Length: 367
Image (cartoon, rainbow, N blue to C red; front, side):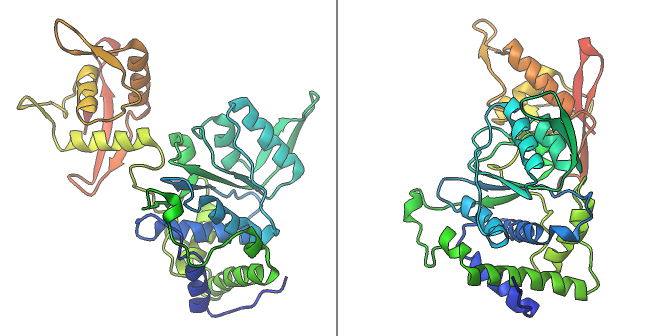
């Protein structure tokens, strides 16, 4: 296919018009920037070193029929001519088999459509950042090692991901205002047949090629953001998207309904602790350290970690007693954030969450 080179302003206008009817979240253009980054990544991944990996992309919507699958197809169809969608395995052991098969088949991309389960586990964590994939062939005991560079995409409604996967993923957040998805008015419907037309594919790829050409002519400016483990991608693809005027795709999402719920709740908890916390007009000594039970009281009072904190009210003391299983889960969660730094605009630029003391007298504090 021959690409037409057009001036950068015309190329960016074409792409904005193409995507104008999708309900991107009100996030300062971050989701649109990630969408453009996904399109450039699929088209121009050969600009990257062979050992460089592409971060995961996730189209995350607040409801069905928001266009998340179609946006993934807009990434895939112009390049491949079609889009092969598949379900994400619910069983963790099946995830490795799907990834092994994709590498052995030489797939340049994978699209997991409408993922229902939480995206977590060692298999997808390791797959994102490793340039060489090792696995076992089906039907035998033979193993393999193959260099790979695959773009992996997910679509989901209110996707839940583990912190480790979230650090390897970029989100396109969609927010449909209509309670009835069918009520959303679309003036220029887009479907597979439209995207598969040769003239449409050529127009989209020409626009992407023009973005790349303009970036190259400008001296290949590097992107301002950095995603750990994907430094080459951040430098090249981030640079192309930023130079085109879409902003950095590496700005992190801050919408409460998307991404990692535990991570969002933990950030809220630390922010409240840093601002000081009171119970019955008595301030918690959050600088010196508070007990696990006090920390749980604060979480319950602020409606944090609602799915993780289960227990009952003691009939005599009227105090909340957390169940042992929930106590263990929350203890592990807090331990995972021990020593980590949270950054806020206020009241302080950075706050560290710490666990101090021994097992019998463990306290939690912010510093």
